[in-house]
Length: 448
Image (cartoon, rainbow, N blue to C red; front, side):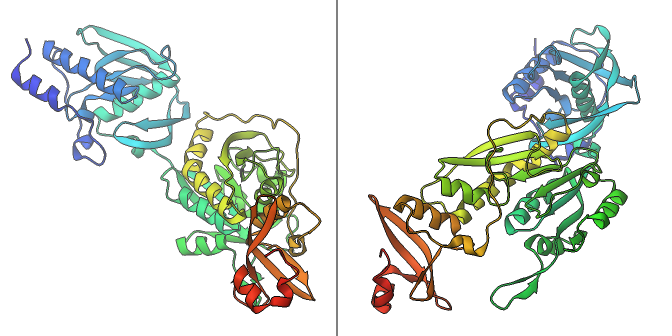
């Protein structure tokens, strides 16, 4: 029969969430498993399954005793359902393997953790029978994780942050890099960006957005000089750092094998299209120009060619009828920021495998200022897409009476194109109505 104290405890069983101080206490040995403790063990299995976990230690439920339950996951043969009481672990090899771990006391957090590849476990089961089992693979990882809980050790204590090099230049790259910077699995050992360039109306020399971000965060920064064609200086710098990973996001150089082969794990590139569609520098604009219903994110393993490497992960993103290149880029950036830190962890942990690109390749070359000129011979639908694709850069424009007029926004009414917003050189943006009032002669030649 269960005593009142155990019944009261079972009603209160709840997984403690870090940094609860009880998770740091070393648990006490169990004298003997009685009926009351068996009832707690049964309840633990229910809590573990309901929480979609594969292991749960008594200290995680504020029970300072040396026992845990385990089982389930994607492959039940690897993680059988069982109980370990007063376990003792002995590594059978010095070899450690990297794997992805989560923890019910750290909801949503997954980290790459090194564990012994093969172990022997001695202890008792829930019937007080002694047992000794050899484990390897995922089951060995689960047991080591739960055993740590009995010692007051959390899986975050086992984390050795991955040494990461980030390479990119534009503002959206900096936003993605910020999400990686905030994740505990990574130590950013170097940020690489393009050299400072003239920008704006006054052509003032300015660092790239990624360079500015790195300086704000106090991160090591290397700016690649335009004259360093071979990237030899960067290669020597990277070799001294011994990075685990190299991640590229919109960096305007093709990297040679000498650099790609430096990191411990294959170099990765984040690209804003569903490769092999729209390889190149302007995939977002290309998707808008084509009138595609969706585009996406590709994380690919890099080779020495332009966006041709095998795909590690892809995800579709819908293109809204109102999207221009700025809003769609921001949508892709938000999605990338949400998923990329976990994808890097999964990649290092062996959960993501690179697969060759499939399908016909297409290309989206770098846009120049003159590429924004509107071809009025195209259909209204094509021109409307063109205006959205060119916004905000290089900007759609037309020439009327020797003046260059930017077309900032337009819409379709049936099959008719109507311009909504324009801009003359040196002037502020103006609505179509305002343009018709103030520039009557110019307005006559435009679909306002």
